[in-house]
Amino acid sequence: MRAVVQRVLSASVAAGSSRHSEIGRGLLVLLGVAQGDTELEAEWMSRKIVQLRIFDDAAGRMNLPVRDTGGDILLVSQFTLYGDASRGNRPGFSGSADFEKARPLYEKAVRSIEQHLGKPVMTGWYGEAMQVALINDGPVTLILDTPQRL
Image (cartoon, rainbow, N blue to C red; front, side, top):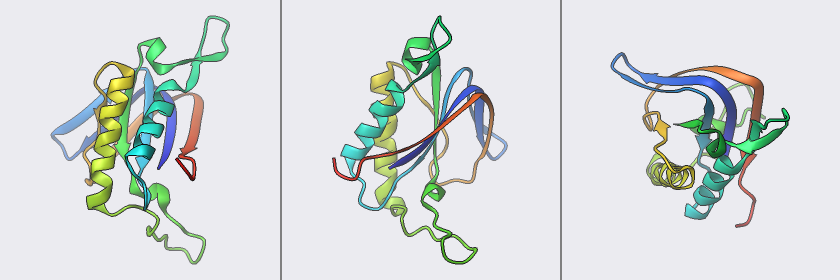
């Protein structure tokens, strides 16, 4: 499982003209599910996202996790995080889990993040084309990969 975690002042995602999710200060997380991922990877990644100490404390040091700041999380599925363009110019996505296998793991990650965060998580719409907007804070952007063996 791979996540691009961005500390934001605000973020939103839209699908079409009628659906919209948004957050204020917090984290925008783009989440990709790889071939072979299981609920263990979803749980590990969820815990890591919520516990990342990337918000400033009173001394101005990145020392606080999102849950200690009262911040929100916007979680957006993104299979293209496993795109491979090492050969040619058109990326292949064979490293991404199939739609039917990835969706339950994405949903598990949503539930797990909500449990660790202690409040609802805003999400995009799985498998749909979306428009994502954000105001990055810092900027602080991290790429997280689950360990090879859990």
